[in-house]
Image (tube, rainbow, N blue to C red; front, side, top):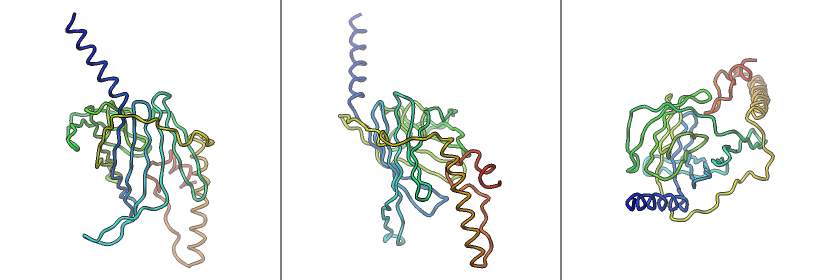
Length: 246
């Protein structure tokens, strides 16, 4: 009985320690569909995750290559206690804040293993809005966290790739801090819309963009640009049907 009490006390101590810790991860985010490189900073505790994506523009070559931070960025906040995520999207000059439930990903685990930054990782696959994602996650950190909208795995995602080689998230550094600050929802005072409502805004926006491109091409006496491919990493569903082809 005494040994059981000691084990139980140790488990309680580890749990309390994890609750007072904070996780910080820096990711490289590569979008092969665009000529830009991104970085993402993520902060997490046991209840919230906040990530901040910064677009970098590349200049120079070889050893003279430099990256300059641009003014645009993307924020995303996850609340695991209340099961939702909220994030920002810009369509031209319009700014939207979208709220979704944390029930977007259904993962299938496979036997593949890897080690990232010294952490042993398991692998899982999920299909989501037009692409298949392969995630490498570790359970050696006392957190549940992931970049972008990704969620639903019992650990911390350190690498994500799409199986069409378009998108890559790769952790560059992992830091566990022995104190936890309150992570605030930066969109708490903003009007929030549903994903379906955002799709309707996006439909109107894309139609207007295509109309302007076609008009410009006609004025410049050149071929009309093709619009048969979705311009986003996350495909607006059902984008190809109700936006590009009607």
